[in-house]
Structure formats: structure tokens, C-alpha cells
Image (cartoon, rainbow, N blue to C red; front, side, top):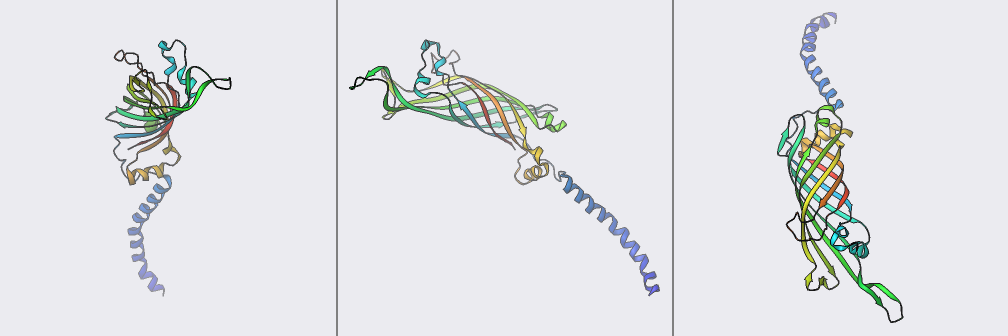
Length: 264
């Protein structure tokens, strides 16, 4: 028996030498798995998509031609939910800074209320009413084309999950005022139109990849999503006509916008 083990010893030593590199590789793979290292190259990043939500009140009542009257506030009260989407092309990556490219957004909001009389209305019972029983509504479809500058160097190089950004460009909104019979008509003028102006956005995004980088990298490997963010943005659209339109209805405004962004 001793001779058997003595004869087997050289083979066991050779086997150990051959298996040692494989064991080392297996341990390295295990350590890599536990540490969340990226096992593949990051996919290319060219685009960003946003879902956007804001408490929005159009600046209709700020028009100087109203001489202090507040038709929007009188008819509809305060703010309404504005839902929107934005698609950006991150056309240029500036080394050690961030990305720059064009973006396009579109949204929708609607305000409804009881129609108001131009003059107080005397009822048969002797009371006076300022509102009628007929409902009225205002629908706004804001759109814009902007240049988008995202500064993601903090996340990429310092690993701080904050990405400040800025947007500036042209805003355009289609609007429609209607009642129970359809599109409103006042003195022969249909209650539908469009307003042109400028669009501005200043925001800060928080990168959700920081919570679980390993899962985020596997998600990138599987579907190509590089980063996922939640964001807060100060948004302002000044739809005053840009000197091209004569006294457009000012359906733009300013608001705090919140939402979700994915880069891919």
C-alpha cells in the first residue's frame, strides 16, 4: 500500500500543478461576481428618453393686454397635471465633460370648469350668477426642440451619481378651447390656435445604477440600457410669439418637472 501511494505521488503533484490555474481563475470569477465588476464592455450610448410630469398652470393671465383680468384663473382655478415625453440624441460626447445633442419633447394638459358669464347673470329667483351650468375646457399640446447638455463626468469619473443638465431652444404649443357643443367661438373667432416662443430647462438627475451596479450592468448587457435616472427640472416656456406672432395666447408657463430618464 505504501508503494502504491509512493508511486501515485508524482501524478498527484502534476495534477495539482495543472489544476491550480483553473482554481485561480474560478476564484477570480467568483470574486468578480461578488464585487459586481462588469464582465463585458459597456454598450454604446447615443440616446435618452424621458417620461415627464409637472403641476402646470399656463401664463394666460400674464398677458398685459388683459389689463389685470384673470380669465384662466376665473374659469379653471389653479394648476393641472402636465404629462410629457422627450427623446434626445446624444450626438456628441465631450471628453471628461458630458454629452451634447438635440432633443424633442411633446406633452398634454387639460383644464375643465364651468363657463363664466361676461357680465353677472340675473336668475328668475332674483339671485345673480357669474357661472353657467355649461362646462368649458382648455386643452394644450406643448412641443419643443432644444439643445441638451448633460454633464455626467461626476458619475463616470468620480462615481458621484449626480448629473446636472441644461436645455434651451424653441417652444410651440397648440391649444383648443371648447364647450359642450365643441370648439368655442367668440365674436366669430374659433377657440383654437398655436403659440410660439422659447423653451428652457435646468435640472439635476440622480443615477439609480448606484444602488445596484452589478444588476445595472447586466441590464445593459441584456437590453442596452446604460443608465436610469430620476430627475427634477425647472422648466420654463415663454410662448409670447417671439415678435413674429401678434398677441398670441400665452399658454406657456413655468413649473417644476419630475420624471424618469433612460440612456441607451
